[in-house]
Image (cartoon, rainbow, N blue to C red):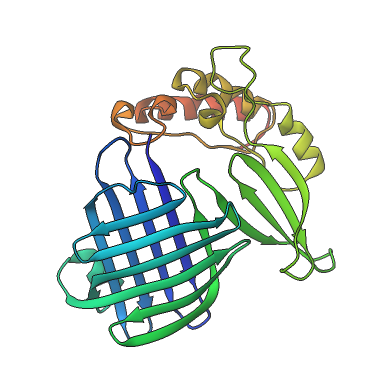
Length: 288
């Protein structure tokens, strides 16, 4: 199964960028991609899809011709460091970068930190020019850990919630965006060994969450079961339980998918399933 580490960032001065390391699994080469857009400097891209896989998962070091990168886990789920020294290709804008791989060769460097909930800061080097970064972003590690930030409703005075998704759901609250307190921790998936599925999809949670929250509730029958043969039945059950939407893995050739192939539907099966779940929703006087 493949793994991916991905950082995205931006700041108030218009700097945007990303860094992504993808491991397809086994001894296959890794793919490394980093890019940064700076007003007045264009877009710089570093890309190599034939990188030797890192030897460690706690300290991810990538070395190739004209490329060195390091991704270091300082505190799991809370703090990662990123270093990059490489030669990239500079383009005038994103459109040119997407259309061509030929541009001006330039040295590029990242010395960045990501801290939960969403802060990214450090330095970016382009040639001999140095740019300070103090902005926001999100990071997903090899276990698909994401951190999302959202403000409390307007009628709540002060504070911010963050939702962390890794091996668990974790909701944290803060009144100053610096000191955080866990207010909810819940397992992402249940494994009880009582059936043939990899996991147990708890549909009891749908009406419970809808009673407690005004937000839409989504059901993920793909990750919730781990098997494509079970996705259709659990998707329909989720809609019948009151889900407002579904998250379903789709792949034209699941047997060749780099990740989650065993739980992915082929496009034609997905299209047929959507017709069936819409009929269920309409029977309950709802839209999906």
